[in-house]
Image (cartoon, rainbow over the protein chains, first blue to last red):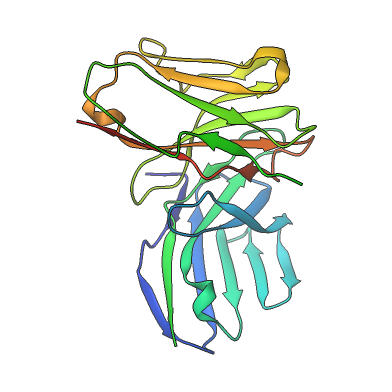
Length: 110
Length: 113
């Protein structure tokens, strides 16, 4: 079993929809949680970065971490076709290296 | 500010041939990473450099892979000889004092025939 798991999708939604992307992790020592966005033929780009449990909001994006259930979520409000990409969650211990999930492919249709 | 630069972007080689990838990190970033990304998977760390020193290379297949970071700036990742299973995207990333905020290059897509 991988330490960080994601549903590969694809997830297809209409423009303007609220998108919910999710990850689960197994390592209780993970403290930092990241969401990266990766467009086709590009490298991953850091979107959000949170420490421990709670919510963090940045524009249309909200990251949520529930350490009790080892569940990580990314919500995208008012989704746009430009949000179509693969979303990777990642976690790590303090000072250790990132462990990535396999990514969820999102398609936002006009 | 320029991002992480990688070259070549694409490489097609025959199996058993050598291949090398080059990475120029963001200026001032002391930590450099090489990742392997297979199709439909997340990146997996191959090696991490702190300045010139390779501090985490436990996932690097040392029988055929080698890496160097001369003068603590640019880095080269080499495979010799390449195998069919090495076909993947090789990503370079860099960071400054924060392992959680890594900046990735566009990657080199390797195809081994």
